[in-house]
Length: 585
Ligand code: ADA
Image (tube, rainbow, N blue to C red; front, side):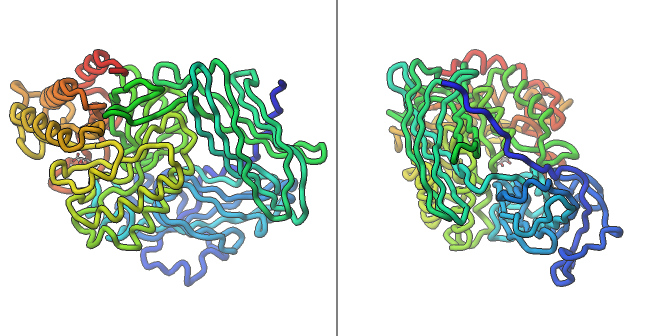
C-alpha cells in the first residue's frame, strides 16, 4: 500500500501587528468602525496575545476593543471555501471582512470559524475587523463583575490570544473525523466516522481512501466509493484493524496518523490528517484503567500564563514546561480552568501526558444567582460541545472536567451538571466525566460523575500552618468520601500552599518555601496510603498572575516554579516523590 500524497490545506496567517482601539463608550458599532476604520489614529498591538500587558494603558481594561488589519488572498483560492478561523478570543467576538458582518462568538477558549469566500477579494487586499468584548457579568462563563471582582482566581486577560488565519478548503472536503480505538489482544481496533461535505451545486462521485499511517508505512487501508448529492453531507463509518499495534501510554506515546483522501473523476481532492493513539480508558472497580492497567496520575493543575504574553504560551515556553514536567517525573495535568491551546495539547499527545480536559465553567458559585439559569446552561452546553469537538481524537485526553469548584451544595447544581453531562456524553460517549469539588462531604452531586475529583487546602485556608491536623482531617475526609462512593476512584485535583520564592523559615511557616515542600510531602504520604486514590495534582505548576486583592501578592504563589519558571525548594522534593511513585499501581 502506498501512502497517499499529502497536500496542506493552504493558510493565510494573520499573526502580526494589528491596528487597535479601545472603545469604552461602546460607540464603535453605531459609528460603523467596521466599515472604513480611520486607522491612522489607532494604536498597534500584536495578536495573538492579550492586550493587557502590551501597554500599561490596557492592563486593567475591561470592555470593548477593536482590531483591524489588511491581508491579501491568493487568486487561486477563488473556487474554494474560505474559512476565517479563530482559535481563541476572550471573551466575545464580532467579525467583519470588507465591511460585511460574518458572525459572532462567545467564550474565550474554544475555536470558531466563519465562511468568508463570498465577501473576499481574491488576488487583492482585504480588511478584517474584529470587535472584542471581555466584559464579565454574573452570567458569563466564567462569571465576574470586574477585573478585580472575578469569581475565579486568575487574571482576566482580553483580546485575540490564539491564532487567527484564513483557511482554504476544497468545495468537497472532509469536514470532520472521529476516531475511537479499542484493543483486542495485540491488535488495535479503529472505528472511524468521516463526515464529507459536498458544497457544489452538482452531484459528485468518487472515492475516499482511509489510511492508518505509522511513520512511513500504511498499516491499514479502506477505500470507499462515495457519491454525494448537491449541497449535502454524508458520514462514512468504517472499522480498521492495526495488527500488532503499538499502544499509546505515558511511557510510550506512540502516535498514528489517519489520512483521509478524496478523489473525484481521477482528480485528487482534499487530504486531511488526524493524529491519534491506540489506547483504552475505562473506570472499573474504583480504578482508572489505561489499556487495562490501573494508573496513578502524578502531576499538576496548570495555567496558561506568562509575563507579557499572558495566556498566549509561545511554543518555546511550552517546550520548556514539558521538559520540566518530564524531568520531575510527572505524567499528568488538568487544563485548569479552560481548554488549553492546540499546541499545548499536541505536546501532551506527543509526550504521553494524561490530561483532564476542563471546560471554562469555573466560578459558578457565590455571586451567581441561579446555577440553573437557562442562559448559563446554554453557554455551558455550547462551550462543553465546542471543547470536545476540538479535542475528541486526542489520546492524551482521558476525561472531561465539566466544572471547577461550583457551589455543589446547591440543589440547582445538579440540574446544570446533568445538562453538561448530557452534552458531553452526546458529543463523546467514550470518556468519563467529572468536576472538581471543593465541597467534599457536603457535595450534593458526586453521584452524577464517573470519577471523583477533589480540591483540598487543609493546612492553608483552614488549619492554617498546622500540617499535623491537616493530615488527619484530609485522611478522614477522603475515607468518608470513599465510604460513600466505593466504586469511584478519587483524584485530588488540587492541593497546594503559597510560597514566595526566597522566603525561608525554620521551622517551616506559611509562605516559606519550606512550608510548601512539607505541605506537599504530607499530602502525598496520605494519597499513597489509600488504595482508592488514583492521583494527585499539585496546585500549581507555576505562579500565575491574578487580580488585586488582600489575599494575593499580585500573583498566586502556589507554583512550585515561579512565574518565569525558576524552581522553588519543592521542586527537588516533588521530583523524589514522583520518581518513587510508579505510574501503574
Ligand atoms: C481554588 C481554585 C483555584 C485556585 C485555588 C487557590 O481551589 O480552584 O483556581 O486559585 O483555589 O489557590 O486558592
